[in-house]
Amino acid sequence: MTELSVTSVAGPVVCARRRCRWMRFAGRGAAFVAVSVIGLELCLRVVLLNRLPILPFYIEQGRPALPASAHFTTWVEWHGASEYWTDAYGARVASRGKQNPASIQTGDIFVLGDSQALGYLMPFDQTFGSQLAKRVLGDAARVRILAAPGMDPVSELAALRGYQSAVNLRRPRLAVMVLNLGNDLDELFFAGLGGGERDTSSSTRWLMMHSRLFAEWISIHTIYFSRDGWTGVNPILYNLDAAERVFLARQAIGVLEQQAADLHRAHLNGAEHVAFVIVPAPFQVDSRLFERYRKNFASNQVFEEWNSRIDDFAGMMDALDRFIARQLCKDGFDCVQVSELARNDGPGAKWFVQDTDHLTAYGHEKVADALARLVFPPAAERR
Image 1 (cartoon, rainbow, N blue to C red):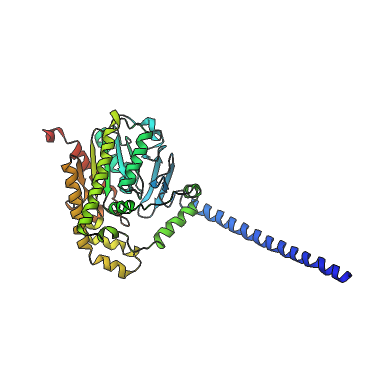
Image 2 (cartoon, helix red, strand yellow):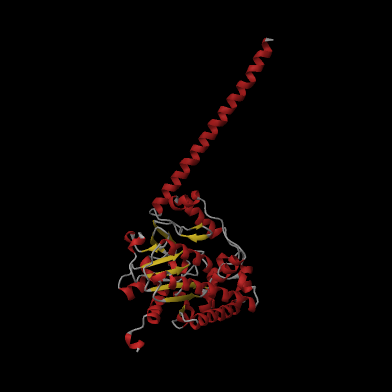
């Protein structure tokens, strides 16, 4: 009886000891991981000078948006450092003093679009909106840019309506809408199918803004593990027939003109002038620029399959570019075709950032010049 009693007690004691040993081991492991994460976070903050290695944006109400009422600085290779301020509804503004929508003045400039309009990873004063405000209004800060990476004409229209319902734009001197041929038509097609992303969770939003380690992970994942073989091209658009492409272009025109109608209307505060900017895919300007995307493709074979047809794709995109621009002009709108500006200017490489489709500071400057001449010509030209 005594032996049985000792054995019956010893079993649970041994199990308890093992559990304690595993709990201590797990606790030490968790502490090691926590210390390592904190250490990496602190190291990255020092290396990055507390700047973000990505441009943070998220999905809200089914559409991309920048963080609202935010102030942050990005630093990304090829781009350098760029400071961002946003107002209470996510529009990019010049400084803290412009974050309050009450600071909007009658006759400011308003820009709507995707990352091309935003000035992707670019200082505010280099964006065409800011440069245009300086030329026309004498103040580079009198512009609001409602834009985010991943926006398309449909999500831009929804963002505009949400912004107008919350903010008094006080009759902008000029409203500029940007169509990015590099991806907008594909995204418009996808939106028509009911495609879309789920809203970003609050925890992901917080980590994106406050953890440099999490932001660096997003950056590395995007660069090295997201090679789907389509970078720099519009795979949906190229697989449509001519009639379907024209139909899609007409859909884009319809949404753009609805944006213009909303901006004109806005009761007594409608925009004085409305203009459009059409930004091409870089290979429309110079087919050799497509080579920059080789590293982003899944394999050289996939890249060469696209590269061998790039001149045909450029011709097709040029035809859509001209069609959209002519229709907008026919309907009474001013329109700047960046493809024409760039081709008449010289080498396309100075117009587009080395590793993306985005316009350089030089490209933004030329767009601002073209808009100023088109919408606000000198008195001698008006006569």
